[in-house]
Structure formats: structure tokens, C-alpha cells
Image 1 (cartoon, one colour):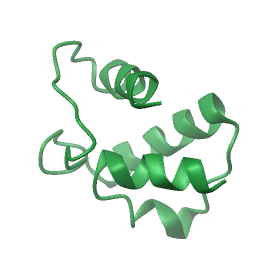
Image 2 (cartoon, helix red, strand yellow):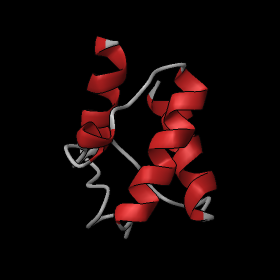
Image 3 (cartoon, helix red, strand yellow):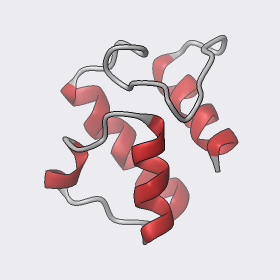
Image 4 (cartoon, rainbow, N blue to C red):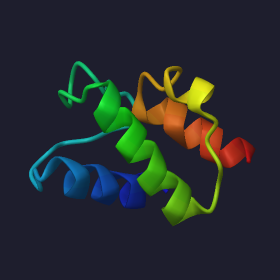
Length: 73
């Protein structure tokens, strides 16, 4: 799952050289803003066939948070 999520993030940011781990902080480390997080959430929904409520998106601080959410669904 981390590998596919990494690919999605790299495609979304346009930076194929990003080093991404589960501890990567979405805003600070990747430079994402709130709109980027919403767009990323949409991509994750499509890829992993989950629905992410808007109120949950703000809780995604790290890649691990995204993975945990997906696994709980």
C-alpha cells in the first residue's frame, strides 16, 4: 500500500524523486496545502475504493495517517 500511495503522491506533486515514508508529513515535508490534500484524498478514494469524509481530510498529517484510514475501511 505504501508503494502505491507513494506513486499517487509523486504523480500528484509532479516530483518523481520524492522520498516518502510512513512518517512523511504531508504539509511540511511535501509542501502540500489544503487544496492539495483534498485532491490527494480524491485520488486515494479512487485508487483504494474508499470514501473519505471531508472532516477526516484535515486529520491526515502523515502518510501513516492515510494508510491507517484506508486499512480501517
